[in-house]
Length: 276
Image (cartoon, rainbow, N blue to C red; front, side, top):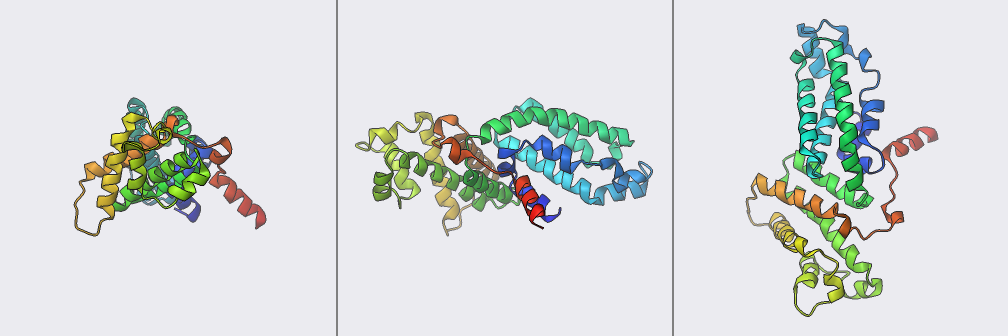
C-alpha cells in the first residue's frame, strides 16, 4: 500500500465517519481494474496465479476489505449481510477460483451491493463519535489486527473514559474542572455507583451499561499493569466490542453537531494536491 492507502487503512473508522466505504471501494480501490497486470495473463496459468498474489492493487484491495469486515464486526452490523460479504471476499483471496475477468468483475459487483447495505449501519453508528474517538478506536483496531491485545484494550477503553469525562463536563464545566478534571477512570466511575454522589451525574448513564463500564476499567488496569497478567484473546474481543457498543449508543453521545463534524481524509489529500 502507498502512504495514503495505509493512512486510510489505519484510520478507516475516521475516514468512514465522513465518507461511505462504497465510494472509496469504487473510486479508488477498484478503479480501472480491468487494466491490472494479472488479467493480461491466461487465467489459471502459473504466471496469472503469481501475478495475482503479488499485485499491489489486489493486495491493497484485500487488506482494505479485511479491515472493513473488522470494523463492521465491532460495529455489530447485520450478521447475515456480513457473512455474505465475507463469503465474496474469501473467493477473491484465491485466484484459483477466478476463471475469467467476468468472474472477478461479478464478485466486485456483489461486494458493492452488500457494502451499500453495510455502510448504512456504519454511517449511523459513527455519527455518534467525534474524530478523536474514531482515531482512538482506529488505533485500537490496528493493535488488534497486530495481535497487540494489551494496547488494543487500553486504546478502546481510553475512548470510553474520554466519553464519560465529556458527559460530566457538559453538566457544569466549571465544576468539572475543579472536581473531575484530573480524575482517574475509576474515580469517574464512582460518581455513577457510590451512594451520596450527584444524582444529576448518575442519571447520565443507562443503568444497564454500569456493569459494562466497571468491566472495561478492570481490564484496562490489568492491561496497563506491569505485572505479568495473561488476557485471553476472547476477552480482548469482548472488551473492544463492548467499548464500541457503549460509544455508538446514541443515548450516551453528549456532543453538539459542530463537535461531531468531520473532514474526510480524501479532502486532506485533495487539498494537499492543490497546494502542490
